[in-house]
Amino acid sequence: MAYETIIVEIEEGIATITLNRPAVLNALNNQVFNELAEAALSLSADNSVRVVVITGGDKVFAAGADIGQMATSTAVDVATGEKASHRAFQLLENMPKPVIAAISGYALGGGCELTLVADVRIAADNAQFGLPEIKLGILPGAGGTQRLPRLIGAGRAKELIFSGDFIKADEALRLGLVNKVVPADQLVAETKKMAKRFAARGAVALRLAKSSVNEGLRMDLEAGLEYEHKCFSLLFATEDQKEGMNAFLEKRQVKFQGK
Image (cartoon, rainbow, N blue to C red; front, side):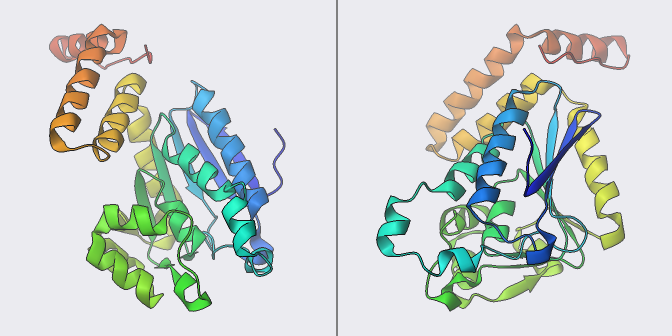
C-alpha cells in the first residue's frame, strides 16, 4: 500500500514506521491514524518482520493531534465518530511482535499517547513529553487516561494529565515513562541495537510472552498465572523450543525458525 503520511521500511526483519508530516511537526489526524492501522495490519501478517519500530525522525516524534481538524468537532461528532485513533493504537499495541518507540523531540498529546502503545520506549536526551489537552478544555482521548496510569501509576499520571505540563527525557525515565535515554545522535543506533537483540529471539516465544504480559494486566493475578502457564505449555509444542534447548545443551548458536 502507498502511504502519504507515514513511511514504512523493512530491513533485516525490522520494520520502521516513520511519521511523515514534518511541516506540521507530525501532527496526527485521521489520515495518519488510518495509515497507521493499515501498516499495523500489514506488518502483523508479515512473518518476515520480527520487530517494529515507530519513530518521527530526528527532529520531532509527534507534537499532538491536528487541532485544526478537531476545533470544529461537536460532541455528537466525537461520540459517533469512527474512533480512528483508538483503532490504530489498539492494532499497534496488539501486534504479535515487539514494538519499540524511538522518540526524539516533542511527543505531546496524541504523540505521547502513541508512544504508550509500544512495548519499549527509547528517548533521545532532547525528547519532551506531555499531555496538554487539559489546557484546551478537553482530556487525553486516545488512551492517555488509561495507558499512562497503568505504566507509571495513577498519582503520577494524574499530575501530568491535570497540569498539562511537559517533562524532559530524564524525568520521563525517572517516572518509568521510558525505558532508556540516549544522546540524540545515538538514538537510531541504540534503537537498532535493541531491535536486533529482540529479532534474534524466537518469534513464537516473543508473541506469547508479549501476550502473557498484556493479557495478564487485564486479569487478576490468579487468572494471569493460569494464562501464563497456558502460553508456557504451548511453547513446548514448537520447533523453536526444541531448537533453543538443544542449542543450549550442545553449546552452539541457536537458529530459530519461528515455528
